[in-house]
Image (tube, rainbow, N blue to C red; front, side, top):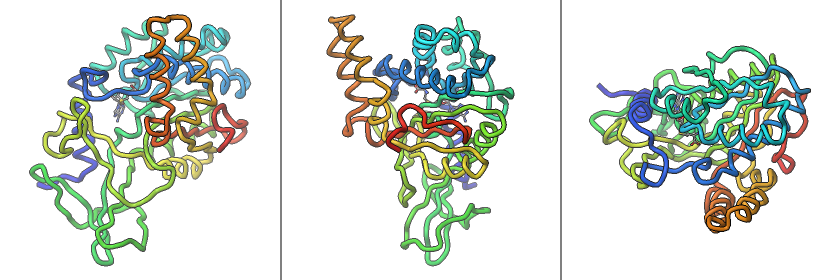
Length: 332
Ligand code: SAH
């Protein structure tokens, strides 16, 4: 039986994260918080400034979506405690994570902050919230539609290969597309953005997404699978490799603004992180530990350089419409 691509991807991603900790040099891929502690520290300070702009609500939810090993949040909490102890005292930590294995890693990394876990964004308790998410949206399932003649067909997976079937209850798609064009749609990412948009409007707060993808939607396929830092066939062996797709930032922003929230960005990650002071922070770390100075500086460079993660990765904030321009979005 052919399986719709989003169903296949959802199953593959859940099986993948349930069975392993994939991060780092010996794993399948590396993420920004695993590259430099300055990344999580800067995001913690971003949340602290946003908390001030909200009028310092106490208590306030600090939420991370897809926290991986908990590294980003551990770095963020350390920076917050140093710079804004009032925010540290007011915050209640909530994590959205499906993998039991990664929940256990997060429990070890974040024991001091007594986090509470949830399976889905919709399960978070109410209240003003600051939400961080790095490489979360790219793991959410996508559908792929292919232009054939004057209709869109949909890609299903059968025996490790794509097969084109009539599109099932398709979302709105462009009327005009060249023959063979592929349009990706993540209904899951749009649903998360719509839910957060309504929530931020009603209860206040801001959400910061860092992920990779173009600023504006286009045709093309971006589904990819990584294993041991190399590309492998995404359909061959569900659950064995990390499956991701480019984030459609335009669709995420539109879903949140349709629900009443404001969107700031997207801006390239390099510009965003430089404006948050990542390079200065890396230079401080380098001075404090000369033995690893070269490593600190090249890690910051990798996060910021356009040919590294600085351009393809973007930062997008969703927030209550009354909030001012948030740190890093001054140029947007
Ligand atoms: N933010 C971390 C990890 C990124 S990997 C980092 O930057 O290192 C993606 C993370 O999202 C993992 O923790 C994975 O288990 C989680 N995840 C993936 N799909 C999810 C879903 N549908 N619901 C909740 N968490 C999910």
